[in-house]
Image (cartoon, rainbow, N blue to C red):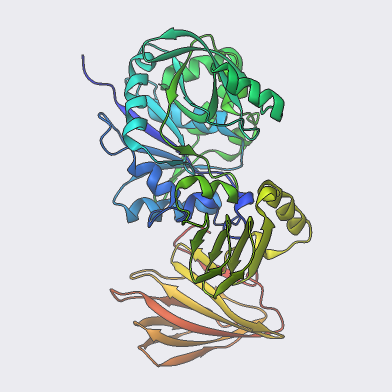
Length: 473
């Protein structure tokens, strides 16, 4: 018997609002490098190295993050089928899209196993994780829907739980899912020894999952099948049909399938799992110093204990404090009691109601061609640092309300300005008058770095009229 093909399905959605101000709507926590030099998404992929039978990864992402996902795969030398959701519809439709895609348009391919993984978790013991996956494979091949239950080490109220049933090879029959408990109930679950935390990770055959959808959530199966049938390729992405996908009910995989299936199996997972749901979760990653402080960036602490201190750029100094969260970015500072870490989400919601941009973008805004960073701004002017990747170009565009001065700091810039073509090198500059059609391109082999000075009556990003764009925006 041939070894089964395992196709990782990476769920790249999620906002990570409790990790504000590092995590933003357009750069959420799965793209952050919180533990080491790799992002959470990249580490999710790297921990699969060594699992036998891996096929091409399927990443399910939203429109706004598509180039971030592709770039982070590329950085670690991996490729993926990247499915773009037209709208957020929770995990059951996302996994359904991956399952239908994996089976192929005619549904005639041999059904692969789908290893469904959120993109924003930390697992310290990779070997233990891979052992759990191997233990799950025979059950999944036989048609079971396998979930991985994390062995709890405390009475946690922030997670859902799974109660185990009778023992099976390497695990247990799945008895039932239970919602996030109060403190007393969580302690009872811990004392009972028959409950696991719900990790949100699964392994099953693609056809087994779709069959369970047919039984328990047929509207999801119908809509998503139509969305995949009507998909189209766009650059390196697969765009699901908008109308069909949006018509799908929005349900989690737990609620739509796993709470109802009679074919569930839970495999115990004791691998240092952490979903980094809030800032205080960093303390459990073993990164703290002898004073219990987790520090990153330019930080100086004196007589400080049991705190999380992170700075992006400027000096962060503390004296005589304890149990604090202090996170400094170029455009925002968070100071919170460590015991109130979960309430950062409420803070972000209030900021959104006030239409504050600090919830949307980081100070460095990533684009498919590179990035830009705000340096200074005031009435009728704005200064940005622009980085254009080798071989990349911005859209052919114009502005109704602003003019721009460009100064090349590093590399070479090829510029179309009206009917003119310019080639600028370091320390050279040019001026783009208001209303003039223009395009910026990096023809070189190194990154192009520029300083852009904008001036005009309105400087918002929506004052861009794109006439031609390589990235389908």
